[in-house]
Length: 107
Image 1 (tube, helix red, strand yellow):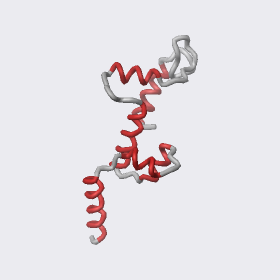
Image 2 (cartoon, helix red, strand yellow):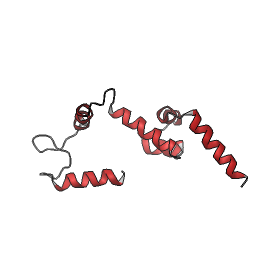
Image 3 (cartoon, helix red, strand yellow):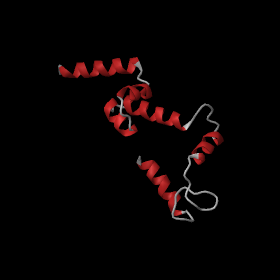
Image 4 (cartoon, helix red, strand yellow):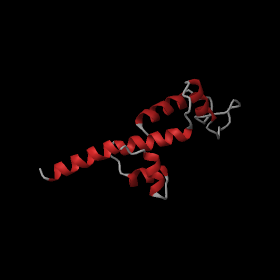
């Protein structure tokens, strides 16, 4: 969980009327992701699903230098080929990273 998400959830918990951060209208524990889905719709994010967010997370982690194996661990993938599909590796980014690594070997 990022620091930003932790801060948001902490503030939400401070103002909660029950022991739960996410609640149904009756104050009970909310077991679904419907609140997130409603937020996506309210923001007008067409063609965006919760699954899209997993793909985006995987892509950004790999593009920022995290290995496929590390991302697979975070996402709970048992097969690395699933992580490869999620990460949306861009050839130009992979080529640039390889160039930087190889250039640094001889310095």
